[in-house]
Length: 148
Length: 148
Length: 148
Image (tube, rainbow over all chains, first blue to last red; front, top):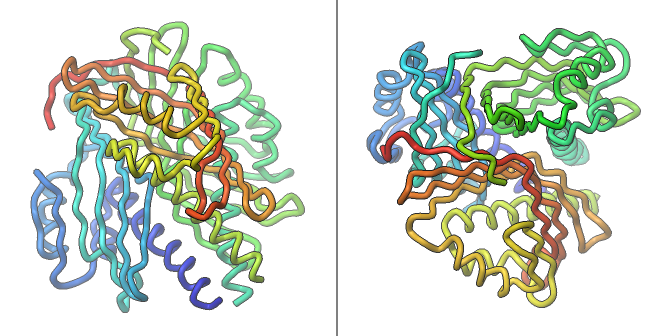
């Protein structure tokens, strides 16, 4: 029974980790994003955005691309399928709804796709050790007015 | 172990409460929305929609704004991060995808943002005692046709 | 306590089942979709798409409608409210965000609505035995460019 309870707690913790990552991306909270990934060698493959071997390498690109006032992003996770692998590792598929508004031009960009992730239990709790994102749906639009 | 089990049950119950609230908003089910909030003094801060101290005050505005046949709404929650605070209170951050279609004009309005909530265990189960919504992404569009 | 643990495991398993179904629809993975539904007599009512009494009948239409390279779909579940009914049955309401991009024409179609589902524990784990989908929000658009 303890093992079954632990499994449920781990599923909640991993779901929470990914939610924390996605919310931190919307807030552009660099320290919160950093804490979602394990230190040292990891694997981040975000397709056209790049392939990164450390969280620092990813954060450098993330800051260059996203950390501008005109970049308004939504990262909403859906449809998670999380599998524990042994006691200290897990994998998951997530669907992603991504939406970007360029506050300068009013152009919008909606992407839909998936993450294939791997997580590890570390001294810092569950962390992401591999994340492969592939988008299969891309649509460009323009807001009719800036009406917030 | 009982405490750990109780914690998991509370997380499920709180997630369910917010889902019930969001679905009730899409259905415009006033009684279901009312039951999600605690009776008496609460705190609802929905930015430009208003600041409310009771569920009745909020429901009066909600009915005036939303309860028309031409107002077609989606409220989809994502990325919840729920924290229990003691045994009978909890806080959460949620991401929101909101989409409105005006069936008369064909105009659409998409909002993305967050809720910062506080919940309390009452005689009616978990209920919302504080909810602060802030939208950071707003896009206006128009459907090319009404093609349902 | 075992019953309470079992209930939480069942909620996770049912959430996972629906997520597996929705992800399989995005991937157009026919075998994965099939495995989400029970064999034999079931009830699938997808409104204008049709009414089906077996998973094979549904899959035949699904393949005809969806399994083309130009059909790019997102099926994202939200706001699930799952209720166990006895030990081997359950019901749920889900919100759905559906988005289709026609890669040939650049036309897009967004639907929002709900599923009312019934699940049964079978020898194959939890499976869908009834699914009624109703969309209440439909918007047609066009991508400004194909920019993936």
